[in-house]
Image (tube, rainbow, N blue to C red; front, top):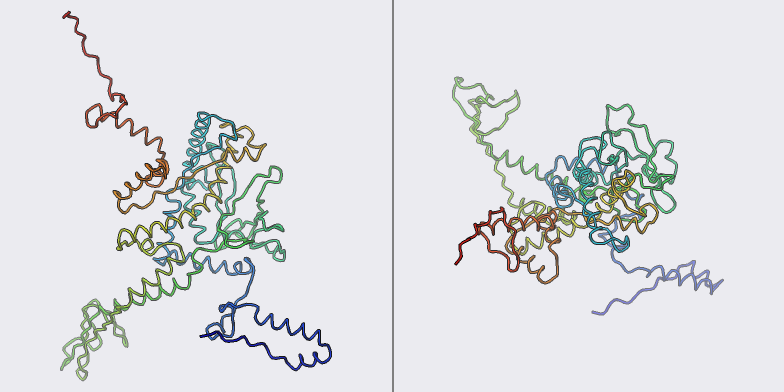
Length: 529
């Protein structure tokens, strides 16, 4: 069927009047009208369609679209996290597979730029990693002395998931520490615009930005605005994002950016808050219906007044003057002039599971968590379950890269600079040359180990990848078990030597294993043959 021909707009009375007076101007005006009429051909942008007539949108900036809704979004996201099973499970799943028990650092300095030998680079990396791990495992790295750095990573992930963003301040520890560095985690609600700054266009929801949208200062409340006990909840402190003299970063604003010039983060559950709440209400209604359906109440009719008084139940049931309460196994007595009626409310919604699963799949799509992983129920084939895990791994890796970029790498930079100033490590040119500074700060953060559905198949695949040169022992170790592959190799060598010594394993060809125990040499035969 050929497409319908385009219909040009009919000249109006005003068009015809102008045409008679100024034909050239009228022609330009008419051409402009035609161009505007056929400027766009996207059906989704039309307002004359029935499905789209009531759909009114506003093309606001990133801040105009989000800042006014953030308080309500945060409160509702936290309520869902506390009370909704799907929201709570999604948050725990995202945290477990993004940061797990905490991302550990592996230093990977650029020895070519720094002019170091392999031995010198390895020695520096090992020393720095050890010092950082000592600092990260101590609770002195937390200004509140409640968590170590690995635990703080999970706390910060949860704060950003629920609230959209949080602020990390560089502080000094309150007790002796490996290096004089501590972190202070500020919840999103405490970053707010002071009353006297409300008219300042450069202050966006507690963040002062420059002309390029870069955050230059933060206004931080002394206490959470929802803390009813605090007397200083509305007192502010202005925190500079960068030191005025040193230029060093003093605060980390951790959040995922989805649009240019986006000043504040949006909670992860924001697109699905309504659907989660509606599903929660639907589930509660079905649970209540199932409970009511389990009740079976019998009303007894008697011909005399020797039985229980009318409207009274057997022990265990409570009724009022005008109220009859149903319950499991309840027996109610009624008046002699009334008939016997059994109350057995039956209700079975066979569509609940299908509907619930369909909605949860939509929730999983919005959060980047496959349905099987979201509900922790793997009933499909190995191939399908494996594909779901691989897809989820990509989403988790994306979130992990953001955590590393906004939190882990900057904190590691704070640690290295503080350790240098404290004389614990040496890094020539660190403060003088940006290129050498970046070369000293190369890192690789060890992710949580992945899920293994069929260990035999997956380890065989890893071995094939190593044999082909497509992957390395280090990559496989990080993906499967975590830890340091070099340390595991050394441990495996010692174990092999011990098992060879007691003849539980054959020796490796061409390698003489070191005996597990030093044996006394056999006595020499001094007799002459």
